Length: 297
Length: 276
Image 1 (cartoon, chains in turn cyan, green):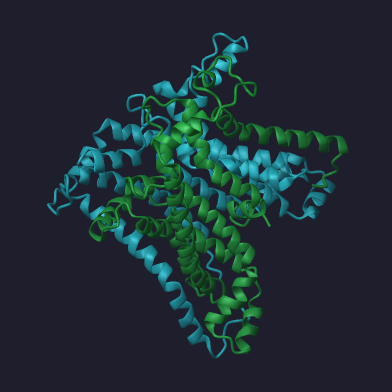
Image 2: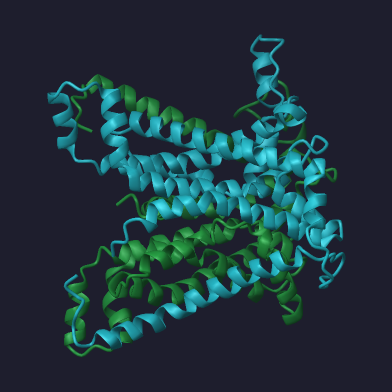
């Protein structure tokens, strides 16, 4: 870079380091410190208050023998996989369909982004209502004449997580679509012309030329979707409180309940350590591929 | 785009686009409409859309039950304060990453962003303990700090992407003319980055405004913001959908209005600068 290699290099780097310190300090102290603390105490038998009496892996043993935890993990996996796939597919297809000048475009985009600008709590309440069998979608369609129509996800244990998924998708897909749309707009018109001249079918152009070119956009959306999956707690609390029974429990809620309601701190810490581990297993290989291989500044 | 689109096709696409938009907007619209209905009309079968007796009664009941203005004020302080504090901390950091990059800049950025992926419950208890020992529980200042911390990675990341678009030569020139570092950031960089900073502020304000996990856990009666206000209505204490809708509408109205009047910043901000 042109700016490098000047005599003031050392000083300027010093300035830069000082400027970055508050940010790095807060991130490290709070997140790393807090997380390590939690991991350490997960090996103790802390109940109401944290104390350092070691019990080894007992808490983890108990955790994996609790059916509520197993259900939580299953739910998170279902939610995670489907929300990833559907957000990307729906977001991209909508963006591809709408990839052209639309009247009042900013307004249009604002509307698509509105759900994302709402709190998960509000989203959960609104969808709790729309999915209510007595006056939501089910009753409207039955009124239209389809008497046997059944769509009752929030009160059916087997499919309740999909009810939550619908609300989650509603909240997030507009944002994904706007990001994809921006990505599509950024692609040079000549690429399309060249593909057309070569007689490549449209779907092939999308699949093999456009999507690979939109790699940075896909990475941004992946990061956003992933952080949304981790935050599904709010949505579950607002929509079902984990019900019916324990059918829509998620790990964060398990941890929270153990810590603040069950007076079993270490059990909660063990749960959150497992969550952390899961995130790391997914994140580290990807981060290495994405950032580690080519260190270009 | 200009992929040999006929005029007819364009009209169809525009209609389709707005149809999807309407579908997405419908739940919000329905909530707002329901807040003006009576309880009986709110759950009437078949549903009434526009032709009902508009009433403001629900708003009165909600206001009487819980003081809306107090929650609103807490939300404004918490979201506004944490955003301001975050920007103050993030601008120097983003400056150093964008204009004095080192080998580690990419790594730092990645590590910083990865904290957004960590499950928040993992740090909830330590922060809870810190709050108790510092007497910050259920205070606005405590929440301002926490909100600033959890959104800081996003702020730095966004500012970094905006700053990188500014040619470094301009800062160089300012330095040549003898501007100190403080003046360089304050009077040269910041004014040029105003659109980016505005989008960042808006995004962060919305994120902090909506944050429920931390606010529900770290506040009680005194410092509770609007997310707590709306959550208090989710338990069915004899309150029904019309009142719930009124409470929801009151909680989301500030954001919807703010977003409407700053559409450009909203779109830029919420898409993390992807839309220019």
